[in-house]
Length: 329
Ligand code: EPU
Figure 1 (tube, rainbow, N blue to C red):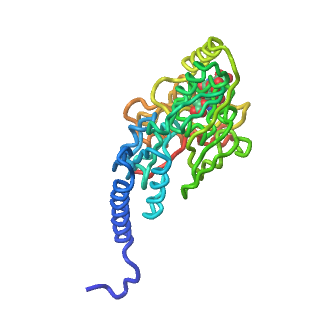
Figure 2: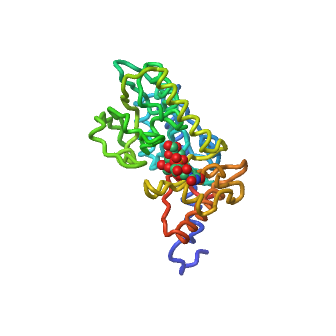
Figure 3: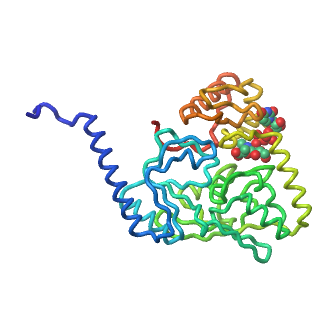
């Protein structure tokens, strides 16, 4: 018999009920996606994110979708909305730390070849969000377009680079953007001149709410050999100053242009510090590398330890540049 004094269900019951409701939403959304999206889309359940991030850590996404067109992307967003599921946009996973419990809802990647095209005409490069930055840099070189050499060393896609205004070698992504094409979470497409898109160091606020679909990029006419020489120079600098083990690039934003996080961490003597298999690189203090079996919890523990030390020793509040998402195990 029920206890008449029990006014609300046990929290544990509520947790089980909401987990069951979530599982049902996921099953329904999976079925909807399979029915609605054309056959060229990729739709999977429980996709391990460790395979899709350069750091090689992270639990599974409930649903993983690679739509093959803008319409299919809009349909995916609509299904997510109808089923009350959050959507997370995944680039090449090169700036991402997914927690060990994985990501609830739908992870969308624009890795489909239709979103990865790079086309050049009249000195302008039109590239999809899924295009690799390295590929764009080499296409630009072949076409004699200079100014995009810095893309060569960023291990990401154009979409991710636009979203975080990624940078290297003194340039950032929006230096090279002429027009931005993006989609709102309700499927509306915007095509904007770059001058109408506010950007900051390592951030494009519009793309916190909108999904980058691609961009028109510009450079300046230049000699292909001169471009190649600059690319080699950048590449050499990277190979000598950055580690080759799995990482998510720089962990923290530089607190000030005159105070690079890597130098600060180096000065604090923290290179080589480990939590499990997560380690502060002994090559560059702002790169935290996975020695093989690191978990997201190891990485987060290391981030917290370094942050605490910077605060206590130097009064500096380090802010992560790496995007941290998902749930604990
Ligand atoms: N430094 C040290 N010790 C270290 C690391 C760096 O003393 O362990 C010193 C360097 O000698 C240099 C200064 O710190 O004098 C800056 O270092 P670096 O030239 O490597 O540049 P950074 O500011 O650490 C930035 C970007 C990188 C980008 C490089 C190269 C940020 C947070 N990082 O690093 O971007 O590749 O410039 O252009 O802005 C990324 O965003 O993930 C990333 C790796």
